[in-house]
Picture 1 (cartoon, protein in one colour):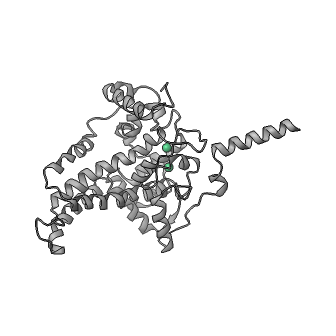
Picture 2 (picture 1 turned 180 degrees about the vertical axis):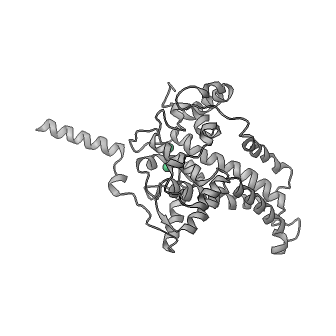
Picture 3 (picture 1 turned 45 degrees about the vertical axis):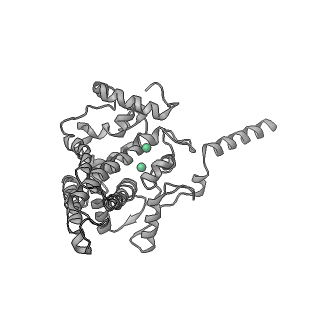
Length: 335
Ligand SMILES: [Zn+2]
Ligand SMILES: [Zn+2]
């Protein structure tokens, strides 16, 4: 990309996405660009198409509530477990609870915890260099958003990058059979809606009534697609649009909107500055719902050893570094 960093990030993102979609050959050139396996991604398109199912069931606020109620726990499965635990080991927990986390994240339908975390470790290792698997700077917005995981090469599970977790057969099993949890989640959605009225004694036609297909349409189809793109924004938009308080070697940004949608992952410049912490919102006003939940879980002893952000790391902003350099220069001149 020659015009990086973009002056108008949103326009730039739209333009690169369109050119990537129209000219897919462009994706097969260069060091990190790989060819998209369009056929293998059919389930991914179908899930997107399935969003229209909301027009074939009756609208219901209860179904919207159900969608939100199933969005945030699954998002936490990705942020609290897939990202901060499996990829970064930012805290400790028991074997049974890490399995719970792998199942919860699995319900977000972004493949297994080991696949997800092994690729994410690679992103940090090579952030925005030619070897980065999803850098908007190197390969454009569309590819960093979703093209990268649609390629044959990145379908592979990088076992050597996540050896610390491949010793757990239960994790390897659900990682290998990563369709299992999504199927169970589909059944769970249908059953929740189907038995809802009977369990709570709600009359059909009431505001609080639900049907199986309503929950499938809203929580499974629409909710999952919303979950997809909110998460994908961390790899695409959070490297394009936002502020950069820290002078990292990559293009990561802090973005409040993404932080809200992803329960704290939008503080991406913070995270690239100090990736091993359980906390991404370094300041009190940087909302980090994932960290709040982890903190609550640590109070009851389910998780422990949450890695903090050292104070000197929080205060080492680009501005503080520039001020320090200026002071040193002035002192040197005085002497
Ligand atoms: Zn990043
Ligand atoms: Zn990370």
